[in-house]
Image 1 (tube, one colour):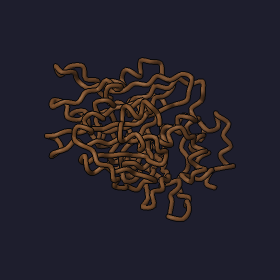
Image 2 (image 1 turned 90 degrees about the vertical axis):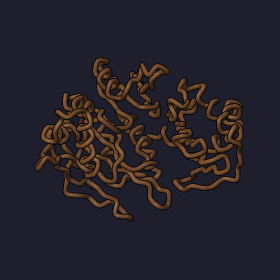
Image 3 (image 1 turned 45 degrees about the vertical axis):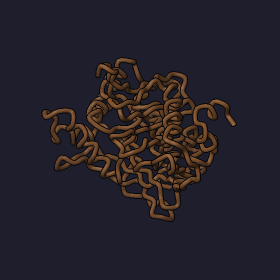
Length: 346
């Protein structure tokens, strides 16, 4: 057993080193669950309340983030790249609620994901060329559907000559590029000062000479700053919680309204239509299989304050069906020498 994991996680260490376990969560000291292949299991492990607190406190020592009555939530990255989330009473009813999400597939490339059945080889080629051509890509999906895994794989298709700046709430991405700057948000201190939000990081990223930016997840008003950055000609990617590509666009047009009363749908609709090129929607099915469910392209047009999208592919339960849409910006593919006719819609 890894000594560091054994010391930090104690009785949870066997779950941490098990490569088949993708998430561990504690509802109470007597109810500890794990997830394998997208399915949850109740373990027979029994802890005490002190055990749970000690595990969390040891894990947080590395991250530098704190948890107390004034900050009853914490979101932190662990040394192995896993993500820790904790909520404590009185936010929770009685016990500490702990989630540890392990990123088992985050080192895989787009081609390797295709080999696992996440998508076809043709779709993988489409996505790689789309990244190389500098298209702006939004990865949408539900919780645990594989959004971060796919986004991390897409960063592997970024040309090695480019400078990438990533912006996240907690470090989860692991881009394998020579010129990378990674930034994460910061919580306020005991005096309530020093908080740094995603919006600030996106603005700072634009001053760092990026060739492109990647936002780990768009949740709130930072959607406006991302859209403005992408509309300035800077390529980028990000993820968004949504039930479908169309829902993702609706949400992306709604979140910027949180930035202030002076932001209107009439401004956001054309901005979204021109800023986003592709939406890749991923899902987790009942068997625990993660898959690219649908890919849509934005046409650049909008009507009735709604950006227009066209379907490129959709998984029908047995195979992928080609839609009527086409890839945007064919001139960008021509610039990188992509032979579109040889792989498009196979």
